[in-house]
Amino acid sequence: MKGKLYGIGVGPGDPELLTIKAAKILKNADIIICPKGKKGADSIALQIAREYINPRAKIKPQVFPMVFCQETLESHWNENLEEIKFDMDNGRTIAFITLGDPLLYSTYIYMLKVLKEKGYDIETVPGITSFSATASTVNLPLAEGDETLTILPLVKEDEPVEKVLRTADNIVVLKVSHDPKGLAAKLRKYGLEKNFVMISKCGHGDENITSDIGDLEEKEIPYLSTIIIKKGGQFHV
Image (cartoon, rainbow, N blue to C red; front, side, top):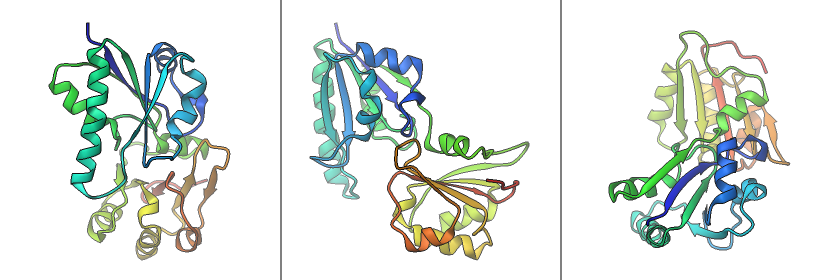
């Protein structure tokens, strides 16, 4: 009998934000897959979920490099995929843990697509996203009434970012560390330099909250940073 794969969202940082369902699955899983960006690096998802994990479970880190070379990416993805298939073919219950929600810009998505096509048993358990946690931390509505909300991964090309800044009422910017200075320039261009809040490492011990555009322009922005821009709605933090 083949095993089952669970995609588990562990949220942005606070272990108490895991769902009850996620905690139950982690308590009973045979294998925990924890993705990380490079060998030797710590898995943040594992740090968040560790207290819920079955002490007898085998922890298997898998490297998903943060590079743009498609050949390198596919090589690692396929190696990781074969490891997961092997364990599932041998009847193991696997929990693939990922930051935030498994179906939002997650390494889990590639595994899901391929294994789903091959008929494996998969269940995805949603997790709290960084922007939901960010909004809750500062009690800032993401959208009200008929306002629009756009989720944007920060890219260095100007047009996608500027199009959203021109048209959306409320904007969530992910992957801020890719080009914080460029984003700051665009916020100034559209008169939005006082209409944003950024939380870095939300839910972690070194969480930081700022609405100072100078931080985007002058400081090093951590990878785990999320910005909410209120263009159309009221902005009160």
